[in-house]
Image (tube, rainbow, N blue to C red; front, side):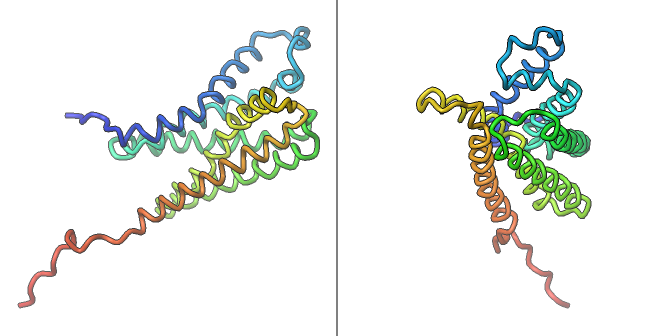
Amino acid sequence: MTSRLSWSDLRLPLMLLLITALAILSSSVRLVILAITPETEFGQFDLFDQRYFLNRIGMWLHVLPGLLFLVLGIVQFMPAMRRRSPRLHRWMGRVALASGLMSALVLYWLAFSLPAMGGALTIAGTYVFASWMIISLIAAWWAILRRQTALHRAFMIRAFAIGSAVATIRLLGILGEMFFDISFQANFGLWLWIGMSLHLIVAELIVRQVFSVTARPVPQSVILPHPPER
């Protein structure tokens, strides 16, 4: 009989869903718009959205895998998934890792081929954080091959933090325009660095917690005594 999911199983996925909801929703809407809008009508959108039409193939290769990475990442961090379906967890992890790598690698192409809102600050941030996400994903893959589960989890947390930061960047831009009259498009590079940095700081705090739990000594009360010598 399958036991019910506990609050501890749902707490982290629900928190991640709350953080990434804006990114998942906006990415899904943009994919639909990208699919149904002819090239002759993209001028009706603002500069930020027009970039999606300047390189349709690149945007599909970036947004769709990125969306898949976020959705699978939320499920992968469910403790119940790892406990009850380890084989499904491994296969979903492979798909999530490949999706994250593709989404991040395509950013190099997009940063080179599309006009960068925010100028050099945006270009530099794109290369820096895309590289860190790629390094984190490769390190996570290498760690799990060596059965270093805690290290694998730590690098996946870092990669997910970078991939989900797009929601925070958008939120910061909206708040900046609403309360401080700061143009989101003109200062996109600034919000990019702030949003990514905030996510990486939180990720490192979570990673410290992961390692502190895994490194915690086993209480003496649960250590079986040695059998008496004869």
